[in-house]
Image (tube, rainbow over all chains, first blue to last red; front, top):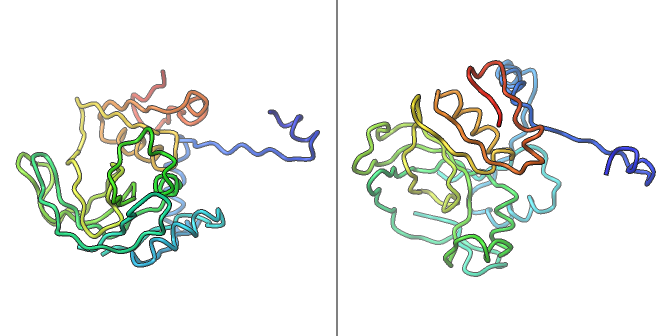
Length: 68
Length: 160
């Protein structure tokens, strides 16, 4: 379904693609602190709750378990 | 060691205990510091992959991890105790220790990355390519169209 078909249904389509050509550029921006990558951490004891949290699709960025 | 165990598909899971495994031939034992949560974990613990993915209950979910090498098995020469490592094999990472095959690719070697169009796979592909190894990235054709653009900072990269 293209953008015109989506628009006819009152929807806006946005295609986001991985682009390896810009990966290095992004890594430099992160290293310089110019962009922030949100990483939320939960303890291993909260693994079940963390999985449920991820399942809500409301997590921005990366969710990790701190194990050791 | 502690680990997060799913006794049966769909259960909420709980912490369990088991002895640290012993690194076998070509393996390293990793003291896991952090494990990433991924959408595939939700599918695995819910049993959505049970008919086409090897599993053994009780199941310890997890896909990718980072940590420190705790022990190395026979035949491992590229890693030593205390090395900071990361990995992605697809089992037993929501725990304090895990076994992983010791892989440190270089020029003249070939690396196959399945799921290369995903978030973890795309980074793994780029990192593997930086080692100078020949990288075969496997992904859906629809993703391959836009996910793999040979970057100018990876000499010799090409798409097929």
